[in-house]
Image (cartoon, rainbow, N blue to C red):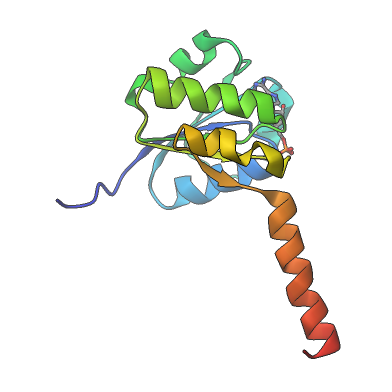
Amino acid sequence: MAKKTNLYIIVVGCGRLGSKIAGNLSNKGHSVVVVDKHEDSFEHLSQEFTGFSIVGNATEIESLKKAKIDKADMVLAFTNNDNINYMVSQVAKEVYNTPHVVARIYNPDNVPLFKQINVKVIIPMLLAESDFQRTFEEIIGE
Ligand code: AMP
C-alpha cells in the first residue's frame, strides 16, 4: 500500500520543542494543528508555519476535539509535563485509535507506561546523555 504523504498532525504543547517540530512538519507539507494553553506560546512558531493554532488546555477533552483528534494520523504529546503527555497519549490511542502517537518524557522511569499503550517516546535526558558521551569522546579522542 502506498504511504500517505500528507498527514494530519496535532502537536500538543507549542513551546520550544512543539513549535519547532510543528514548523518543520508544516514545511514538509503536512497539515498541522498546534494546541497550547498559553496563547503567547504560538509566538515560538516560525513565519512559515501554515497550520492552525488552538488555545486550550490539553487536559480538557474539548480542546482535543476542537483540534479534530478523531481525524488525526499522528498526535505529538509535547507539553512539559509527563502526566499530561500520558493523558493526551492515552486519549489519542485508546479513545480515538490515533495510528501514531509520540510523547516527550522527562522522567525515564515513565517510559514503560507509555510503551504499554504503544506510544513512541522521546526522552531529552537520554538524548543529552548520549550527546554528552559523543562530545566527551570527541574531546578525549577515544
Ligand atoms: P517547552 O517545554 O518550551 O517545549 O514548552 C512546553 C509547552 O507546553 C508550553 O508552551 C506550555 O504552555 C505547554 N503546556 C503545558 N501544559 C499544557 C496543557 N495542559 N495544555 C496545553 N499546553 C500545555
